Amino acid sequence: MPTKELVTKVWIDPGCIVCDACENTCPEVFDVQEDTCLIRPPAMEAAFTRPLTQKIAEAAEECPVDVIKFEVQAVELSDAEAAKIFSADSGAPAAAAEAAAPAAAPAAPPAHAAPAHKPAAAAAAAPAVKSHSPLAPAADLGDPGLQALLAAARTRGGQAGISKARGGLISGDPLRTDPDNLPPDARYAKTLEEARKIKKDGVTRREAMSFSSVALAAGWATFAGALGIMVGPAGLSFSMPRALEEPDPRVRVGPLKQYVEMKPGEVNEDYKPKGIWMIREEDRVSALNIICTHLGCIPNWLPNDRKFLCPCHGSGYYFTGINFQGPTPRPLERFRIVIEDGIVVVDKSKKFQQELGQWDMPESHLAV
Ligand code: FES
Image (spheres, rainbow, N blue to C red):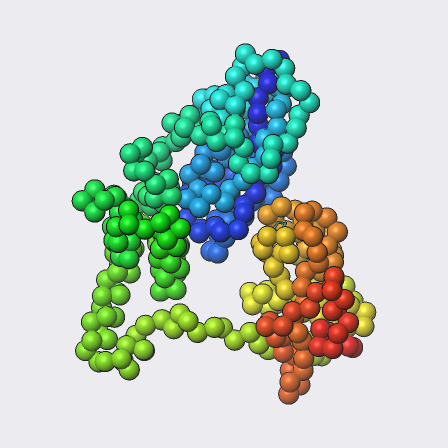
């Protein structure tokens, strides 16, 4: 029976720049949202990811910031299962699996998990995987990050290209500085800075990946600059985004009465867009931080299961924020909560951690 190495677990490390490349390549697994990429819930099962081994490896290879990680296991397949899996993508054999474990290989030892990073076998298989990709960029561009960004832009119908005259640069400022004169981390920082700037200017991530949108943003920047010259610094301050201004960490969440009336065990999600879950325990009202304490994804509240479940790696928390499953090492955090002028105010600048014994401190909750 042939043995193949198949993906049994996939996850996203911090640092996603929401470029869409992974979702374009493997939409069954990757769900790129406004601020990060999530693993779709079905893809947390090995049975789901195994047939998608080739596409997952391809998406990881194309990721410009290398945050897609996966584990593989050597799996013995029946002929029927092998035929099903290897016909999953245009009828072509899964290149990653083929390269990782040739069909002639002897039966593998009991299945084992590869180290928790992109496995060497899969990495070695990457060129073969890329040869199946319609997005495969020209091999002579050098920087794989630029290659993947351009591939993503073209997929959206954009016209991003490489200007050989400029030494292999993406057209559009501020990337026109010769990257050959920059260290790799500085080039990455410039890419990230440009993506953030475009988002702050109100351009969506999907638009941002097309060259025409970059040109549009550059046009507005030119217009704003010209306006600044005409009306002076005072006028310029009105025409430019106030990117350095921190959002107010204090959120007014309404009168205490509405939280007192909640049943113990209830979760109020009205302020989730502001990063807060309001919860009611027997004797108190508290404000939970919605950020998963594993690697920073945003869990979902499942009212029927009475738990928060993180879509990234499956961490689970009770309604109180106490963790009980998955890789997270500690409970969710709670924000400072006070009453001002009869209104409950959540102060996100101050957090309380259960593992440090801080949940009984003053202002970590409101006694009811
Ligand atoms: Fe990993 Fe939530 S970020 S489980």
